[in-house]
Structures are given as C-alpha cells and as structure tokens.
Amino acid sequence: MRSTLQSIATALVAFLFTAACAVQTPAEQNWRQAFTTSEDGTRIAYYTRGPAHAGATPLFVISGGPGSDHRYMRVGGAFEKIAETRAVIMFDQRSTGASDAAGDEPELRDWAQDVEAIRAATGAQQLDLLGHSFGAYVALAYAEEFGPHVRSLVFAGSPPPTLAQNEPLLGQIYPDRISEWVETRQSLPDRFKAPEISVFFSMEFVNPDLAKEYEAAVAGYEYNIDVNNRLRGAMQEIDFTDLVSSFEKPALVMHGRFDAVIAPSVAWRLHNALPNSTFTVVEEAGHLFFVEKPDMFASELTQFLTSLD
Image 1 (tube, rainbow, N blue to C red):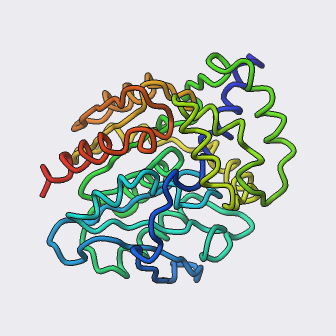
Image 2: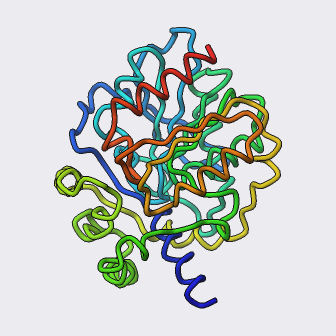
Image 3: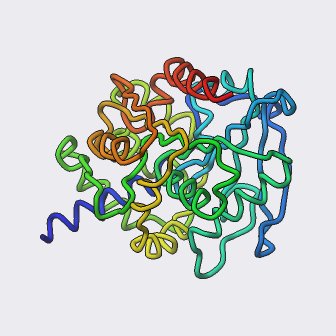
C-alpha cells in the first residue's frame, strides 16, 4: 500500500508540474497579448494568434502545471500551424507570467473562471478546449460549469477523472532516475529555473537528444512550485467520473505511446468512458508528444477540429 501511494504521489507531482517552453521558441510578437479580469478580481494575461474572425471556433489551449510557463505549449510550432486556419488562445495561469498571483486557498474553479473571463473578453460564443496534463482538469471544470460554451474537448496526455485512478510509469521505466527526481522535487525553492529539474525533462521524452535541446530552450523560464503545492491538496478531492460519462459532445483523446508520466492505458480508459470520443496514439513519443511529433499532432488535431466546423 505504501509503495502504491508513493507511486501515485510521484506521478501527481510530475504531471501537475509539466515543462515550460519550446525547442524552437516562436516569435513572441506573433502572439497578441491582452488582459482581462476574472470573477474574483484577479488580472489574467492571455495571448491569441491566428484569424480572429474566420468563423471557426477558437481553440483554447490550457497548459499543464499549475505553476508552469504556458509557452511550453508552443513547442515545435504545432499550434502556429493550427493558427493558420483558426484562432488559438493561450493564457498565463495564476501565479505565472503576467497574470496576478493565486489566493491563499486556490481552487480549480478559479482557473475555470479565468477561462470564462477570457472567453467573454474575446467574444467567442463557443470554444474547443484542449487540456494538456493538469490542463485537462481545468477544461473539465470549465465544461462542468460553462457547458453551453464548450463545443468539444481535447485531452492531450491527460490524467484520469480521479487522481486515484492514475497509473504512473516513471518508476518502472526510469528506476535509475526516479529517486533523483523525488529528492529534487522535495528540495526545490518556491520559484526556480528549468535546469534544476533536468532529470524530469529526461523522463518526458523518447528522444534523448530532443530532451537536451528542450532543456536548453527552456533554461531561462521560471516555475512557481508554491502554487503547485497549494492547489495539489484541493485536487485530491477531484472526481469528474460522472461528467466524463455524460459528456456527449465530441472529444479527442491523444496520448504519447511511451508516456511515462501518465500511462497510455489511462487515456484508453478515458476514451472508452467518453460517449463520443476519438482516440489517437502518437507513436515514438512521450508526455510532450506535441514537441516530439509536432506535424503529426497538428495534422490530427486540425482534422478533428475541421470536422466540427
């Protein structure tokens, strides 16, 4: 029992704190920055790219974390490709980037309210929501409270409806690195730079050379582990089982074949639990499959979104 709980905890701190930037950093000027105010007065920074009035439903991208710089989702240029045909929206989550800090007792609902504030500010009637890793929980929390504004959900390397159902593989696949990661995680300061968690990066990729390039690209990015720690306790109570089984709108579940942070079997069960879901495995890729296989990712996602237009 102790080893099982330790495995769950190790995986939790892993997928709740996934990565930071991009192997090839996109031109920042091509993302338009704006600000809005959430329900509780928190100022949130968001970024848009692509045709704002093309008629296509915007793709709202929710990064992993909490506490990570959202720009890691721009890895390899996949979302830049998608933005050629539809608007793509990203945002600085609370306590990161240009957004205000989270409160003393953060709740997942706060993050969902931030998404709603951005939707209202952009004028979009509906959103295609993509959540990577922890971001899937924000997407589900939003769908639970603001369902009419959701056209579809995209689960990218996502956890199960409850944390207790997760199947981490880090210890099995990387027995020579997992102890170093656990020790490193426990000694991190509230804010730190990417090189301090290089061992974790090495476990997110199938291609070790790409992992090194990624680490070099994100070296200057800052993480906020304080908000990660504070929100993690509240997330132990999360249970989206009923919502998932009753979500009849289109869904796409994408997962890296060799994701060690969240086992592909978790994604398969999620796919089977969703009434109207498509399942896609990204071969030869891990937890950051949109970094390792950006063209394939962009193609599959664009095909799915276009089918809904």
